[in-house]
Amino acid sequence: MTLDFLVQPGPGFAALGESLQNHRHSLETLKITFNEDTNLDAPEHRNSTVPVGSLKDFDKLCNISVTPGVLLPEVRSFNQFVDKLPPCLERLWVSGGHEALFLALHHLAQTCQEDFPKLREVEVPLGVWRRLGPNEKRANEGVEELFKKEGVRFIVSNAPG
Image 1 (cartoon, rainbow, N blue to C red):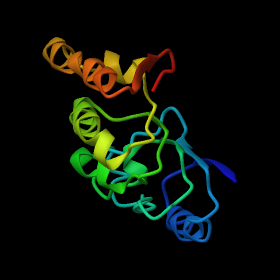
Image 2 (cartoon, one colour; image 1 turned 90 degrees about the vertical axis):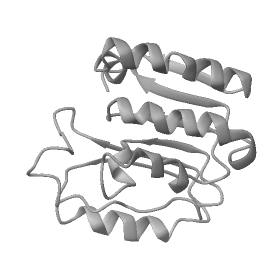
Image 3 (cartoon, rainbow, N blue to C red; image 1 turned 45 degrees about the vertical axis):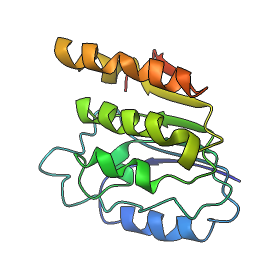
């Protein structure tokens, strides 16, 4: 089963998390995106987006495309992002975010063989990479090598992010 959502922050967002739980044993692909101009860090959205919660119990979910704020109560708590992912994960596409996202990706690369043995591909949009300053870019260039060492393909795509 595949679910693809284009959502707006607001009261209906909580219902999405509840309805996803009904598919935790059948969902294989999940894509949740916001309009390009939606900034989850903006003051008007900070309290209106209730995260869908952990996907750890989704035993068939192998493809995920999300903004980290979809899973986390605080957009900046990227270190917890990896803890919300299912162990059967094969492909992860992450949009949105900022330099803290790469800290989470470092953590994912370091733990993927143990926690995500089926992981084969991680993709981030070029737009996220472009928002990094020169120091962050240098620090994060090693993330590709970490994934490569673990047999995981790391892609910076042409998507705007």
